[in-house]
Image (tube, rainbow, N blue to C red; front, top):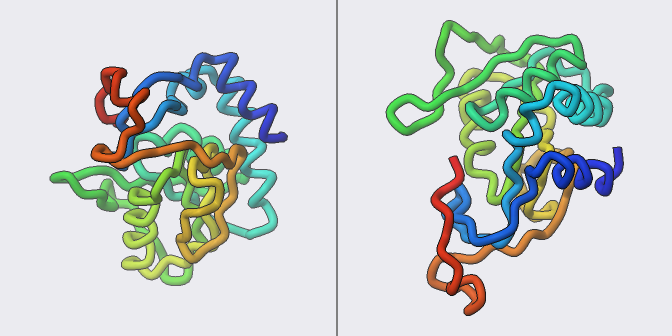
Length: 187
């Protein structure tokens, strides 16, 4: 799947929004990739999951780990496409944790899957959890890399869409964006 094909899916599903958004990272942006809108349709999930799985198939992962909520749907589909186990980390008292009896074996080859990455905070938190359980993260796969590869996680980062989307600190908004009311933090 090409970047243009993936972008078209976001346009067709109404998942590429324009306006003034406060991202989970706290940055402000004119564009928002609302993956949940695209991923509500199972044929779209299957198509995007297959495209990501094809990019990482040769890595030999045995488990996919995704941060809840954003990574759940695509993470599970990538795991299904690869024929491997799927687990997730979730918030507990404001922090991501591994719960529900999920275990990671020492040296287990792990792929971390997320829907969108901007600064990499949730992905880094997930990597830290996997490493604390002695898992071996071999790569990170995302549908949308809003940093166009600028995020350095110390691992290969695979994406379907890699764009440098403008993002601004709250105190550095361009005048045109400052005039538009912001839509709350993307959760």
